[in-house]
Length: 441
Image (cartoon, rainbow, N blue to C red; front, side, top):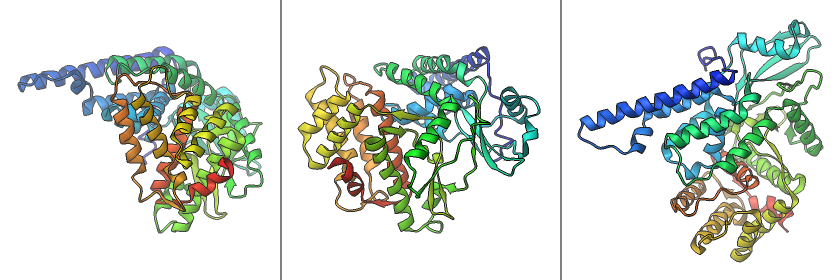
């Protein structure tokens, strides 16, 4: 990737960010008028949805949200993962692009951030500091540095203005998508948006992330198959997270047979799925972001590297126990017990139709298919993700069904779905039932 070509200053002030969203709305409207005129001239009477969801407008939305980054980009990422089955394919494609975007701050803005939080002369503490980021995400980017003492560090810098713009960015983006017609009118986004704001405020506190990292390191003490960076308290600020540098290759690179054999791919996928069961049932503390970039592989030590603990969520005991009952009932094929557990989690609103309730239970049964499978489940040969998507789409087309599940459920399913996708990418075979058995009895 040409990093310099992808660099763009992040607008930090509320007015400049609002202006970006305003120009986006104007651009989308202009694109609609142009496309409408073109189709009318050709003798067609286009529908509004056809005008909104043009390739040009898709590019406008994705590019502008990516330039804003911060909350504007994060809400798109959350919606693409949490509501992907409920959204028009065109919008899902727009939001999916945001997960892969890697725009970075220019050097001048990096220096400004460092001087703001470390003060002038900060560079005297370092023998080397790379201004070219090695990674970029929605609210920050990572640089490599070496201290005068020879310690190799990863320095995560938060984009300017992220924290103070969270609430307004989330509201503005949601309004834009609503007005533009990119979202179904019946979809109740309020709970998801409230949760997006809460999570973003937590993720934007890098001292909190450092504490989460330290906590996970303690919980996984003795689990030599995992490797976590060590936070550096002396250099960490609310907008800067300093950690020890950990070597590793992208975990999805193991999908190449020349990089990793079948046994190694099976082991990596099994470690991640087994860790999720520990997080849910033992720790009641889950790192809920399944982005592939959060996992790397230390080939020399054979260890799985775990990164990014900003999106860490504590799960109430009642929710954990309800999921324990749900999974155990799914393994036994007891639909009534599955329904009771789903009700306890908060999946069924008052007045839900019986066939809709049964359809939700069907979805759970499908999602638990790897748990019920005898022996190793072949994720690479399975069409599980497609079946889950199709079932979700069919259910979502019933306009009287719209119901946003509790945030705890959304984020857990986001993590599980991400791990399934990674296991499929690795073409892994995992005995999921064996991994779950200690927790489900």
